[in-house]
Length: 210
Image 1 (cartoon, rainbow, N blue to C red):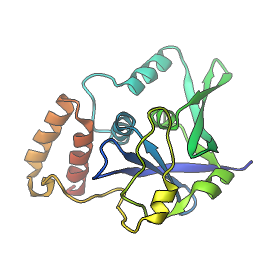
Image 2: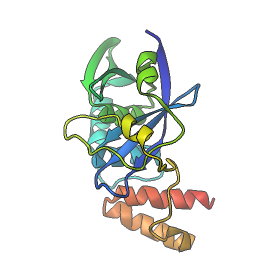
Image 3: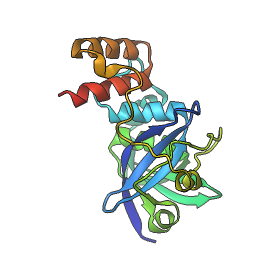
Image 4: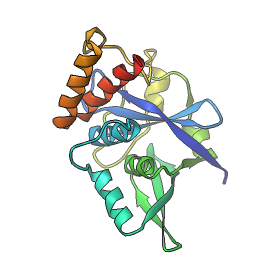
């Protein structure tokens, strides 16, 4: 089966449902997007990996795994979203140590959080993208996250008329009214208190002004 390389477009969050986030993956050579509902912790971890300038004072779980792997010379070579069953994505982490390759089953959100930390490519099969990929517009109403798995929200996206921008949402926290000095001060506070969701939003606002 043909593999399609994916890149991360962004993370969408629901204004109405607490804990509901959608990781948006985009095919590298095309316009289709693959939305995957993930938990708040995983969304936070992915956001931190995307925002290179945000450094947690202590390692998160995925950072700990990366440090552990580095110590024992284990390298994540790639991540493959290899199966979609009943709305649930299944992924594999392809690892290598001493030229021996191993395949490890993982939740898609965890696999992608690790792929970012290892600079490893993310792939899926064309058949999965044909089945679950969508174009351009996204619903802001997301399916409630399952405690154990990542689920797609294709039905909700196609049925709802309301859309959201993935990379730049509305300014609901008044960050646009702050000076750069105030934004940097709030960013330092957010990182110190380990509020990485807030830190990512502050970092976005600071980046827009550079």
